[in-house]
Image (cartoon, rainbow, N blue to C red; front, side, top):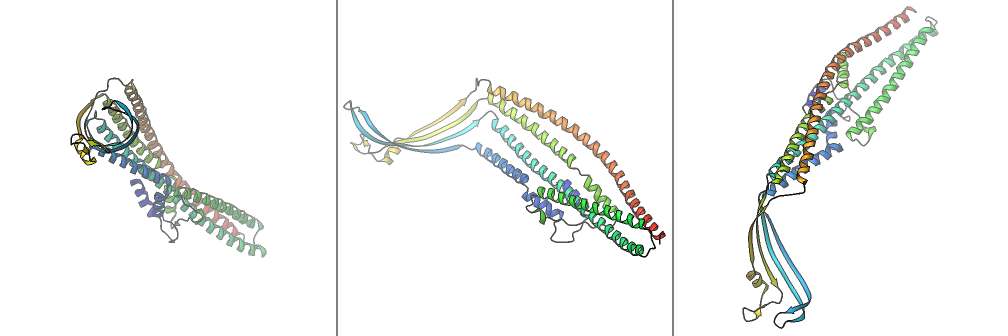
Length: 402
């Protein structure tokens, strides 16, 4: 956000607020960052990637599951004492506790952690990039509106003076001391200034609509920004220059190059993770279980009733195992996936080089634009002076006709 801060410092030097009911630039930026839908989506994406990373970190811990099962069976079963089939109803169940600890998984979890960290960095970068571009666009349109407001104020002042001169000229024309041609010139000048005022007012309404869309402002009619008070023509020229020129393109290019670089690292880790699938997987497993039967008889203890708690205690079964899984043939699935990642890596590298070349062209273009902007400043100054001289010349003609 350093570009935004630099522009804020530059613009606030030549700007002041005249009404508390109108939005300042800081208020516009704050409102946009809170209410802009794209910013909200990217913030949620960042939170989601943080949760993915937290979920992965917990995968290093052993898993522990408890299972309870109870079933009811009815039908004919074989009586092993009489070797006859009998109708019986059996209630039975089981309880178990299972645990698993993955000891080695071919470095896939190590690379997956790096992938998740890079995805989190990418989401943060996209969020900052979006805020930066929105902020630069808000700054450009904010001062564009102020520039139009300033031009309207200038033309309104000129139009008021023209009307005063027309009123004075009408009195002298009625007295027959001046020629009617001077009145025609002044009225033509008045119409020209009115047309310019109408064009500026339409342009201002259009800029407010676009500004409201960026801010996600609900009511365009209630959106007003602080006005710019100009004291010198130099300040107006500075304002015109900063509105017409901004580092949005070059800032976007720098951020895009950083994003391409992170994507290259991301694909490299994805290739390494996929390659680790050729390695064996080692895990430790443990299980503790027991079974019970409703209305069971303890034949060991003189045929007495066999309580459920005693059955669970006596029928325990424990198991500890080591599992090694070695991949021999996966129908070329892993190899094909690695090839796809390698192609994506080459495409991203080419896009990275193309973006660097584009950035170099943008820098050259910005240098040329700066030189053109300097020429525009001097041309604008000469145009304003020519307008003043033209007005003074017409006024001198008017005086000479007295």
